[in-house]
Image (cartoon, rainbow, N blue to C red; front, side, top):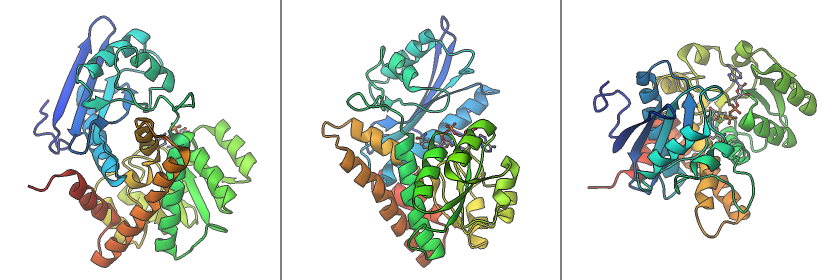
Length: 347
Ligand code: NAD
């Protein structure tokens, strides 16, 4: 399986495979870039169909973390880790401790954190064997980054609505949220409080029904959400929500959500542009969680400073949307350029 020639390689600094026979650990850690600081990124535990799939995922996610931290102005680089295992069946404390030893062997170049398949409790076990764990919570608070991520998406959405719909407040705005899990549910509540009306979907019908009742929101089936007659479409479930076919169906004029890697392929950014739909670059909008984790690593954590930093996502997006308009380019491409200017040292 080639690494240097992999389509997602993009100048990764280091890719490490780790194995522990006793616990069954099979893991890959990818460090994309450390020019701005140590590479921070979550640990995904997933039953990948093949090692090749795991490698593709970790490379893409790790690269994304470099861009995210750079545009959030954090002293961090980008990295990610995956364990090839079913988190419900295969995950054991011994496997997590072995993962901790692998992280520790990199001497702090990579800092791990929660991601899908790994929990805060798992991070505490990993922390038994490595000092390089982020997001364990501040002063006894929960380490759950979702409320911070949701607040960042909320600020991003306000900026996107200003630029894409020329509206300065959210009252009366209609928003479709795809996925009301950790982040989507927090976002729904914030939008509801700001006067937006909501249409929600999720494959978990019980959680969906409870939230819809609480907020007086409409509910549609998962495959119908993209056809809804709304102002904003907020992908908050899995990656690749935006394919060329989905873009053709969208009635929303603005896309802004929490999901990572929303574009099924880079060309989709152009399709959105052609249809006059303003796309909010995902890694800019969903940086609230990593911003909060970065503050936990400092000695001077103050919640109001964290929230101010997260609200800066709106200002960053204002600049991206203005430049995109001036240059007649997709905000996705403009964001990538701006990020590279921040993490690639000028020769
Ligand atoms: P989550 O697993 O809690 O929520 C995802 C929700 O989407 C679940 O309720 C799930 O049932 C639902 N879902 C799955 N497939 C669906 C489908 N086809 N249609 C509709 N709903 C579907 O995850 P989360 O922590 O809320 O994260 C949501 C997204 O945001 C993910 O892409 C994640 O990578 C990204 N993200 C999360 C954070 C964070 O702080 N949690 C930070 C950055 C990015």
